[in-house]
Image (tube, rainbow, N blue to C red; front, top):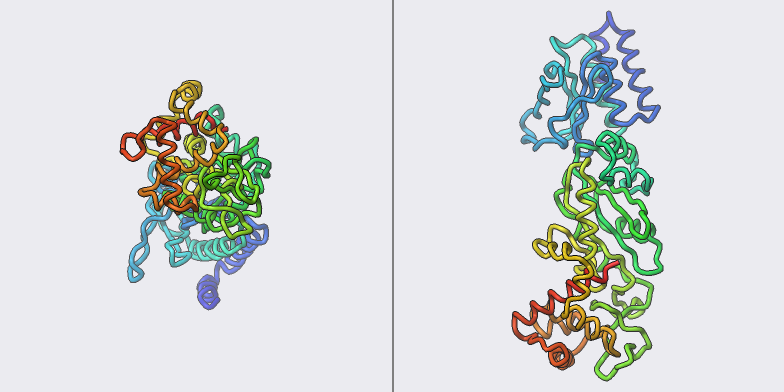
Length: 434
């Protein structure tokens, strides 16, 4: 307060005006104004352009007439050394605003507020900036949960191919997202019988997404998630895989039948699953893949192009399958040329001889276990690694692989044979994906 009192004492002639400025910003804080409202109100009060930039909000600028001004950057720039003065925000001549006439630091992360006044600063500009900064800090320290259940209608509008850019931008703002900051879409499909919204929210809450802004909406039998952050280029795939792998399920787990179990059940009577996994059941401390959601992750795009990331996320979801956390969470960026398989019509995939051979295998008495062994063996680098994934002895896996070679006619000990099997498994996964 000492600095503020010194400023007030230097403004004897305008002391009443200074008090009004203080009251103006206090009222904004009391009314729980958001960042955009604060900048817009400052521009109106100062009768010139105003701006604010933080790591969380990116750059927000408004003209004197209350209309938003374009932002040169959607996030704070790289920060200078602490011993240097922070970078002064640049003017935007194309927006019809003057040069930056004054600015003030908000935090050590490079946050700042400024006025864009043509000509020299006015006497009250300093106190306007100081009170704007105080209000911005107050707004920024409010408890704002980053994970929200969103209005499905707004999310559908953001992801629509038919809506105008203006409508999509408005929907993004209503969701608490910034149209000019990158966004990433995630598609989540729950296990059979599970609540879509509960599964999606629980997974995202466990995903250690930090300061990212997350919006979750239920669209039919799928959850759509929008993630926004200045570091959105970093995929959440590893965080979500870790979240899935760390959380045992209370549901009964899936196991691969041991040799001689031809009825499709384990000794404990559990039904064998359709995919390989690292688990038996939560009661034995193992992780249950069959009770976990499948996840597809799209790439980062401009907020107004969220529909592109959503298409990528849904495509990646088709490749996700019950199994390890790596199999359950598929990042579109990690698919590479494998994503081209998704362009093949489903009918053609289903009619492929290799896919049909796997369908016949899966319908056999030990079918789910055989498919699980084939999946694990094709992805592993050795019999022992596949055995570790399946919780079987490596000699049992060797016997099963030999039986699979006889049934399918593929040489699984050769690169070409394993590639053929892997391709057939992927094609079958796409053909049977919900």
